Image 1 (cartoon, rainbow, N blue to C red):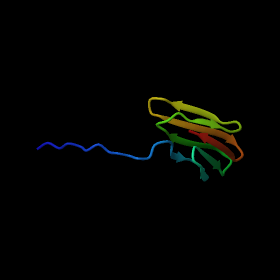
Image 2: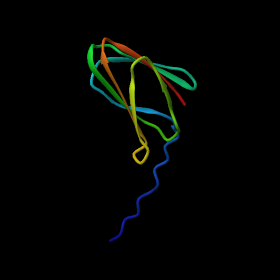
Image 3: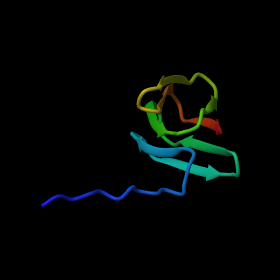
Length: 86
């Protein structure tokens, strides 16, 4: 017996928030998100996106894994805010 998998059609494109190690709030606009990381210490958020992202914020470290299409945002210190444009 053989099975064929049907292609999965996902109508949503653009970024997805995969994980966060701190409480956060997410504000979504048409082509921009704002993520507020609501704890001190080391804060880290990982995003997936099929489109290139521009990530802005004070003292953020951004690592882009092109093969996995992920962006890891890291911040150390007090709470922080990141703006993600796509």
